[in-house]
Length: 225
Ligand SMILES: Cc1cc2nc3c(=O)[nH]c(=O)nc-3n(C[C@H](O)[C@H](O)[C@H](O)COP(=O)(O)O)c2cc1C
Image 1: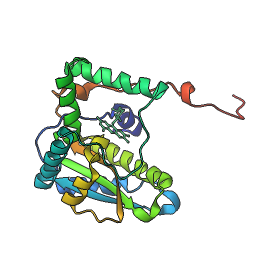
Image 2: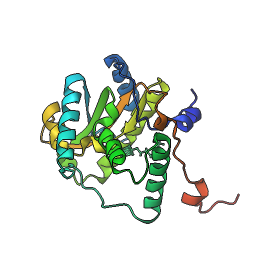
Image 3: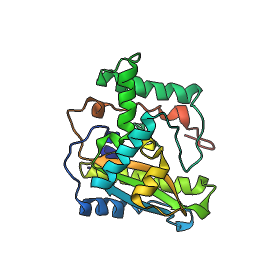
């Protein structure tokens, strides 16, 4: 797949086959993704790859605490609710996903079920947890670095037929992931990426999220053409 096709066809995958992903393939993907740029070549990331019993344990405990009404407990500072244009785009993709999944927006139980799937990391066979050294907080620059690594992982996976979704929900209760994966206290848990072989029958996997045209977000200064 050439680069443009790779980027244009990739989309988030939220339904997976049960088939395991070979460890060597994940190592290959990380070996490609590590080519991401980072501030001063600090390469400040740590990657914890979870599967099997460990991942099941995270899923089970995440589900328990979220169903019990616990609030999110993330390591990184997050903004509040999206507003304005950001909110409109958030709603637009949710409407699209709910439509293909047959989820009525007033059906609280089905909506809750969808949210819980997110907390279970969409039942993917692999979860890639990204962390960085706490001494790099406050994290704007290191967050940028890990963002670059994340996209590399998603693209390298897609090029090999694997699906991913960067999944903030999966580490909403960071303390659970930390305990199960034995992540040291001096690392900040930034996000996780669910990964596995896409289930092509799963309707949400067919959704292609819209993007704004370039002239809506870019302007050119000093050009003559
Ligand atoms: C930082 C970040 C966090 C995300 N968290 C979630 C999440 O918790 N649940 C989810 O379903 N998708 C999550 N996504 C995926 C986005 O919803 C998705 O990338 C966006 O809608 C664009 O769709 P596409 O990836 O299919 O192009 C996240 C993406 C990013 C970059």
